Image (spheres, rainbow, N blue to C red):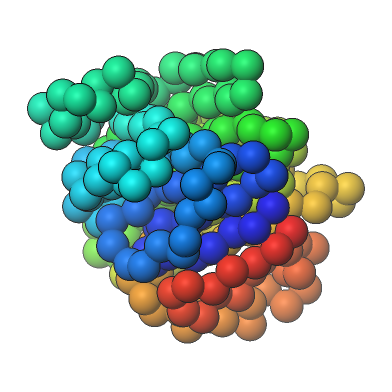
Length: 235
């Protein structure tokens, strides 16, 4: 499995027979092997997660399917591609012979994706995160934690191969609350998943901060140190 960081929360996952593109909105895509089927995922309508230009990929890559959060209006989808597009609500599933998708409710807009393909399990959080903020009322932050814990609970003890998780420097000292909780939720020593920080707003120093502040974390070696767009990782 080859994983390429496109930018912000955008990643391309290349498997033996398939390509999975998550939350692409800008940046340079690597050359897409034309013989592989392309699955494009958009977790919600925010412009840093969804750009309608994703639909132009179907012109260059004919074997393309789109999976969008329900909050992305159908009118944003070209009519010619309605038959290739599936819009999903939180808690819904979609299965074919090759692909299994489950969605989780986000603490912001849209959904998170849990995808199984070619024997791999991939989790893309979208904006499902513990969005507590310095300066917000204690009651608001407490409710956010409760919602996050509830919405992410279906992932408890799920074994994933790759997880894409927000690590947002705008949250200041709260930057890794959701990140750390996910790691504890799936904490199995036998598990060998790789964790890809995202939603860093190009501030990759926040990844180094997490690594420095968690030197004894049991999953330290599984957190991928991203330093710039276009990086590829093999696992």
